[in-house]
Length: 158
Image (cartoon, rainbow, N blue to C red; front, side, top):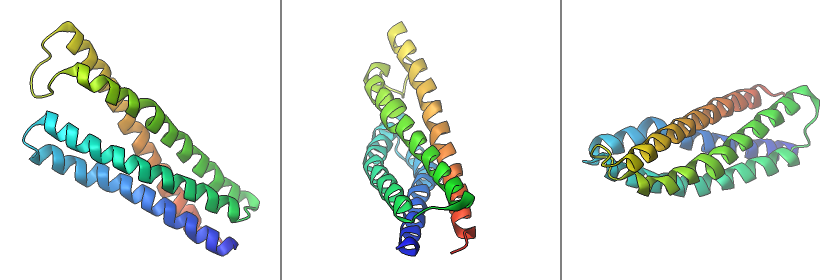
């Protein structure tokens, strides 16, 4: 059971980190470069992120279950468990914190294809930009911790 569970953990983390990396490094730049407007690109990519968010939650649940079923023992396994816990906390921070706040704030920002028309739009856009920057940092951290977890899992003795 432990070997199967470890393979499930590595698969779930690989899909999770690979998905985040693909969206961040390939999909977002392409959408924002080709959509024709910044506002439309944000709408499209926001939909992609919301859909992937559900996939991400499923992969996180699968990873946690597989880790628990792998019968962790020893420092290496507990270090991997710590990395998984960090990933779950980061996921919770952007899935239930920054991303919903961004989605709620976005309609108050006006069109991103023009300068803010009022002080209220300017304030909303400023808050949006800060939240977006935090979301990007949290996702980047999750990618890095996930890569470390994959490396530790690959180096793990059976």
